[in-house]
Length: 332
Image (cartoon, rainbow, N blue to C red):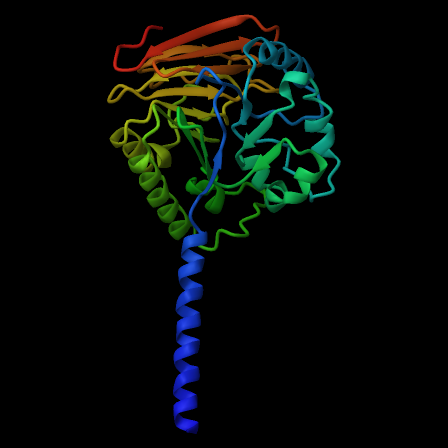
């Protein structure tokens, strides 16, 4: 009887461990958030990056124009491409920079919508976990920041990707900076698993428009230039799965580059506050359609057949427009 009991307990323990592992791997899948389209089936949103400076470096002026344009377009939400709080992220969940750089800056009625955010390299220099904390949502319910996740509206599927851990230099050449790598025990395993998730999500997506958002550029003629790790590892997956747009920040500018090997359009919106005037790389300008080295932001309007991307400066002036029709050629 005792032997049977011990065997039974051992089997129960093995089952519990197996079930626990199964639950762990299931729960590790990317979180998905459903965001409905408007009643006419369209979707519109703003894209902003590299912004949190307590209103300085024209952050407040950009926010004002965002509110004005956001009202005109009746936006559904806002996308942040990372580097949400300068210079070194948040110190913790109670850091006043959250309200001073976010809640008190983006106060326009049209901006009181959900904000979907990813982390940038400057965010990893602080307490990265703080930006992911549900406690911030209690302070400001608009805030939603995760490492990687999906926003689905049926019309469009937007995949947010945590790009900072892909960049090897942050691990080997930190230049005196300290990065918060909690939750990323192995860079190699973390990025490999994330790429598998990205590929799976994009393959299974039936959305009309496939959009990927990350902090780092795949292609850029700005200060940082192309991100070689993303060109090598992420770009082939996007090309193979009919992604329409890759949106990013990191370079403090606005730019539009067309991929020469696929229909992907690379769109940089990293000009939410401090910009780098005159900082443009002279090499690899292939596919470059537009570059602006001042502050501003971007709007996106989607329907079943059409997409319109517009870049604005700090005064709300239209700088560049990209109009694309599904199954037809794009006009720039």
